[in-house]
Length: 447
Image (cartoon, rainbow, N blue to C red; front, side, top):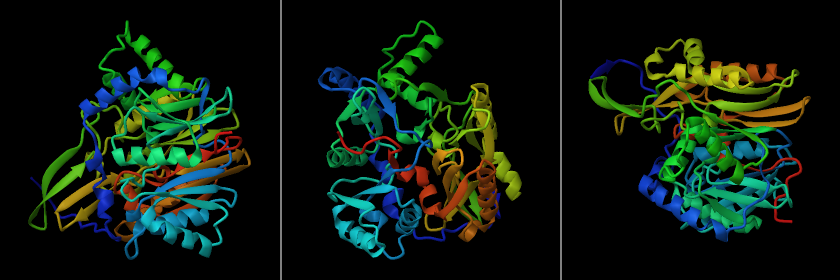
C-alpha cells in the first residue's frame, strides 16, 4: 500500500451529486447487442438520408447551439454548473441562436434570466418533463445529418445510448426541431466523433463496439476488408462524402485502476484511468477530450491539436508520470501525422481531487482540447477555451496561458471560459455540454 504525504487537493466548489451518479443509467453489453440486432431488422421501416453529411466541428460560423440543462444543473445555492452555463451563454456571439432543452421545473428561472440579460430573442427554452432523466452531456446522444439530396436535416442516433435518460430527451428534441429521427445499427457517441471539412474522425473503440454489437456478423476476409467495411458502414449512416479515419493507439493502454494508499495515516482509495475498459485503444474514452480541430494552415494541411500529458507534467514540475500513459498520446499524434495532418501538441494536465468524506482520490485530465472552435475565414477564427487555474489547482494558470498562446500562434482569438473543474471531474468539458445545431448554410428545421 502506497504511503503519500501529498497535500490534499479539496474541491473549491460544491459537489453536484446527480452529476456524479449518471453512470448508473448504463445498460449492459448484452442489451446493447440485442438492440443492435433489433434495429438492423427494423431498418426497412425507416427513411434514411440518401447523401448524409455531418455538421462540422470547427469550420463555419457558429450559428446554432443546443444545450441540455437538467434541473440539477441550475438549482441550489451557488450551483457551479449553472455558473459555468451563464458564463458560456454570455460569451457566445450575438448571431448564435441558442436552444436550451431544460427540465420543466427550471424553465421559468431560465427564461427570467434570459430576459434580464436581454437575450430572449437569441435564446429559446424548450421544456422536458422532469421525469426524463436527461444529463448535461448534450453532445453524445445523436448526430445531426443533412441529406444533401434534399437538404432535410435528420437526427441520427445509434441503436442504443448507454445513458437511457439522454435517449429519451433526444426523442423530445426531435419533436421540438421537427427533425426526422432515425436509429441506426452502429454505435457512436458525439464526443467520439470530430468532423473536418472533407474528413471525419471516430475513436476506434466504437468501431470495435459496432462489430461486437453485430455479434461478429461481419466476417472479414482480412483486416483491411474489415476496415473498409467499417468505413462504408459509418459512411452510409453518417457521412457519405467525407473520408473516415479511425483513431486509436497501438500502445497497450491500462484499464481503470483502483488502488489503496495511505494519506495522513488513513487508508484511502485512488482511482485513475477512469472509463478505460480492458482492450481499449483510446487513452481517454472520447477523442474530443484530447484532439481539437483547428482548420487548414497556409500550406493547405488540416491542423489538429493533440493533448500531451508529458508536456503538462514537465511544465508543472509534478511527479505524476507513473499515472500517465504519454506514449499512447504520442502514438496517436504520430499516426495522425502519417495520415497527412499537421499535428500540434498542447499541454494536457493530469490532476486529482480528494474527497475526505469517502476517502477517495480521483484523477482526471483537465482538458483544453475539449473546446469550442469557430473558423469563419482564415482571418476570423475564434476558440472558446475552458480554464482550470483555480482553487487548489492555481498552478494550472500556467497551462491555461500556454494553451492560449498556442491558439493565438495559430491566428485564433481566444475567449477564456470559466472554471470547468466541476464538469471535467466527471470526464467532460465545454465541447461535451453542447451540440452544434447549425453552421453556415445548414437549416434548423425541416424545410
